[in-house]
Image (tube, rainbow, N blue to C red; front, side, top):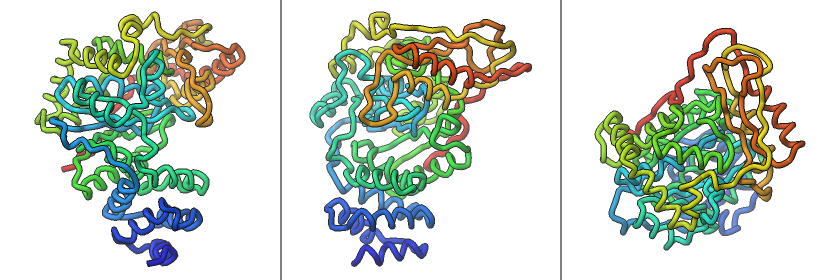
Length: 436
C-alpha cells in the first residue's frame, strides 16, 4: 500500500476502506508519511468529500492515534455536549452541573478562546485557583465525586488531529465538513463519553454562517456517530447575536452563577435546558423533551445544580468564596458606558462585532500565545427587541487600556442596529437533528 495511490483514489472521487485510512493516519503520526502527502489527501477530501462511513473510519483512525480515557468502570450514563463556538456561549458552565444533578456523568474536555470566540477553560480559570490541567486520575475522581469534570485536551489524546489541523490551517482545507466532523468527534470520543449532543452555531458570530452549512455539519456529525454505533443529537442554534448578556470570562462566570440560581436571561436558559434535555433523552433518563426540560427546571429550583457547581469548583481548586460572592472576583479597572445616538428598537446586536470588541479588550486571543484577561469584556444592557431612547445605555465596556476601550466603542457602535418598528426576539433553537 502506498500513500500516493490512496491520494489518487480519493482525488478521483472513490471511497477509501478502513484499512486504507488507517494506513494514512497512523503512518502520518509515526512520521512515515510526509506533510505534503497528507496535505494532498486533505485537499482531495475538500473537493470530493467523504461518505459518512468513510468519515467514521477517519474518526476512528484519529482516536486510535493516541490515548483514550477509559471510563468503563464508572457507574452511570456518560453523556457530553460540544459547541462549535460562539460569542457569550457560557452554556457548558451551566449545563454540566445541571446534567450531573439530573443523574448524568459529564466528562467535559473543552477548549480555549481564539479570535472572536470564547473558551470554556479560560472562563473557568477566571475563578481564582481553578485548575483545568487535570490528570486522568483526577478527571475520573471528579466524575465519581461530583458527576462532572472540566479539563483540557491532553497532548497524548488524538495527536493526529493536532498535526492535521496545522496542515489544514495553512492549506485552505479547514472548511471541509468530513475533516471538521472527524476532528470534533475524535476528540469527544477519546474523552470516554458514550453519547453526545452537538450545539452547531449558525450566524455572524459562528464558524457556520448559513443555516444550510450548519445543517450539513449537523447531519454529518449525527450520521458519522451512527456509523460508529454512538448516540448523537445535534441542535442548530442562532449565533447572529451574543448568547445571554455578557461576553468575557469572569463576566460570563457571574452570569452562569445567576442562571444556576434561577435568575438567568431567557435565551441562555432556553438553549441550556434544550441541550441538557437532549442529553437526558440520549441517556434514557427522560422519554421526551418536555419531561427532560421539566426535570432540569426542578434541579435548578431545588438548588441541586448550583450545589454541583460549587462542589466542582472546590474539587478543581477554585475559591468557593469568590463563587459565593462574585462581587469579590476579578473586576475591570475601567467600566465605560456606551450611549445610544438615536432612537428606535434594537433590531440586532451583531455577535461577531461584539466578539471582536471583547477580544480586543483581552477576553480572547488573536494568537495562541496571547494572554487572556479574566475581568474584561462587554455587558449588554439593551438587546434585540428593546426600546431605545437617545442617550440610553446600550452596554458596558469592562477594560484596562483606555485606547483599547475606545477601539471597542467603535466596534460596539457598529454592532447595534436600530429599527423604527418593534422587533420580536429571535428563537435560539433553529433546528434539531436526532439520531434515530
